[in-house]
Image (tube, rainbow, N blue to C red; front, side, top):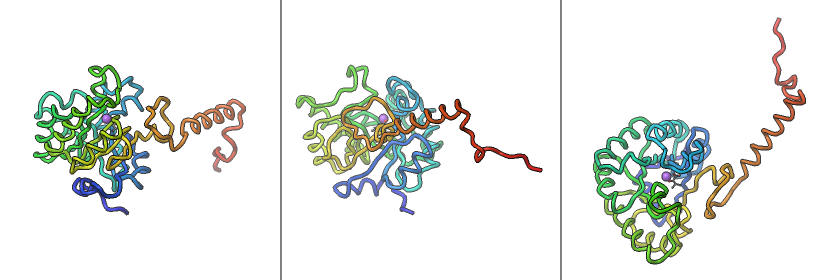
Length: 266
Ligand code: KIV
Ligand code: NA
């Protein structure tokens, strides 16, 4: 069995072997990913990916706690991080601590992740100084989709300074790592070079210290994926094939067969 990953271990991987991260929302997926991943994120993407919401804004603390509990039952060695959902942390550092502490107490996870840069730095400081490690998330922030007018990657050079300032602010505030989402490669490289904490990229090039993908996107189980996703499987096709053959066999009375049937006991 692998030694459980701690926050200091994770942070110390800066500049070493790339950090392998994946999302997980259920115990079974957590068990599979835990065999090799360094970190499992219970992402608020679960609202879209498994609850069919149009974006992440409707995800609640209760959703995150329930899926966090499931993932913790499947994880052994990987660091488990749970996203703070929209509306649970922005109001004040105190509110953020109360909600983050509920997540930690009720799931047993090690750390939380929250979206935001300079604006959230005081909150990140408040949490880390009180025992809750924080992974930050800058660049494309899905919870900002209404102010941004959609999910927009940061490519234009005149937007880079904002993201750099956000990344520096979260490191300064005590974040142990930062997710960088949807940014141009030279910007990801610049941020990764200028920080002492690991950068975890999603749609942010190979320049980051680690990578994360949404599990369902990666294995081909979610229909609409951004261009930065590489598919390592086609689970949707396998599942559709299984359902189709099951339906055919039930309709033809070929399933269940005798091997799936109880005979009477004397
Ligand atoms: O919610 C999520 O899945 C995420 C990652 C993909 C970084 O925040
Ligand atoms: Na998220």
